[in-house]
Length: 466
Image (cartoon, rainbow, N blue to C red):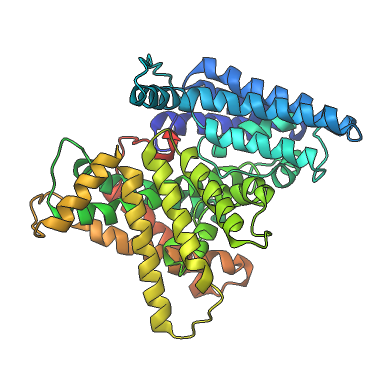
């Protein structure tokens, strides 16, 4: 059920009206039922995986806490949780990828190895909710939080429908306490996040999608200029699409009294790749840092080689988390090399605004190049595109790209700079009358842009495939 679909509007309207009528003590049960219905609407049988994962971690975490002094038994319970959760994820997401590559490797040595493709349907949001449940069990294991006694609260933590499919990946310490104080809420901040999110998705991302899909179609040979414009267009599209989902999730969560973390903070204005990862998909990058990079040793080793190894492993697995394709592996490794190459220069203090701007341009184009690898279907396709760009003249062939695409891009950046920071940094009670009305003029403009330029076909969000 897509946020930008008619079915979701009906679902959420019925849910929220019911939620308002429920007594406070019953609201979390209504929210859990709605979350399970939301997930089962797509494929009911996969709801069992979600419930099974929740039940396993509920039992394991309670037993881990009970037997804190028994290190061997405690570790066995943690391994059980990790093996089952990651095993299910690997089976559904990577079985065909691993089987095909093992078979190909065997053929290189003359072994007759064939892999029968399973063609498994990937459960929606499995990468997100798996990481969320793993973080909960690890936090209990490390003694950072107490195990949750109330199964409904933990089930809500795993299945909370606004962020279930594509995050943000929330920590139990932050989200679990909020389920005890659910209440219906409709504020200017709620309307802001929802309007901004739908604008980014329906006006920016979905209008750029046809051009991006055509340019990156392996059956279509574009001109070098079109490939370059396609790289820029996809860089904008994926940001608008994913951050648009996150903004909508924040707004929907606020309507039931839950506050989610921001998942993006102007990442394309970062002046280093390290800053980019602190501002892009923040919940995933912080998860990888806290549950993978630091446990591997982080940058605590006295030898730079081990520090760089930890960084490359983290980014490689972060890339592989996105999908079962070598393109994602290379994308992750490329960002790992970016981070390694810039690390010796991070301590340098640059005061010149011109040099800071130049750094920002370099970082943006490094990210855009990596996103080309992220978007193509194979490394061979990427090699073909790079060869065409480097050996051909810049000629324009495809003329049906909407001219408003450039305008959309500029508007998107202006929104990030002028609206988000201003809106969130000033308390509405401290606003002067002119500032107060300026907010609602902006909201009205975004609303009319959605009506006039929005794509209402209910296009899928890009990160639903992960």
